[in-house]
Image 1 (cartoon, rainbow, N blue to C red):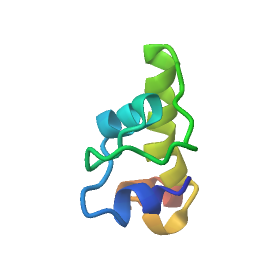
Image 2: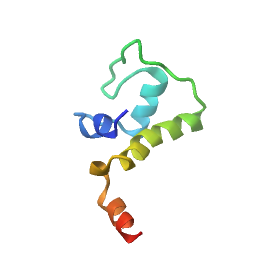
Image 3: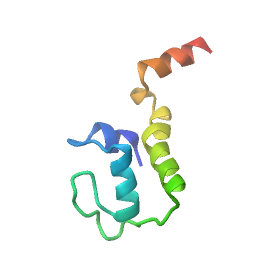
Image 4: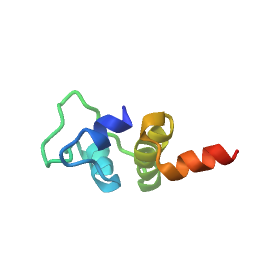
Length: 78
């Protein structure tokens, strides 16, 4: 998964709720079913939230071009 692919390169970007829905039910950000080969995960509510949050926020931190100016400022202070 790439943060830019699900957030920056989408006409209707994934939100946390939309990503949670895609992971658990197989429905994408435009209300279309994902390909049948995509897994549907049965996770606890907290685990689902944590995974989706990591994909949206955690992956963006690992890709320098998508860092916010606040994250860059914090990194410079260290």
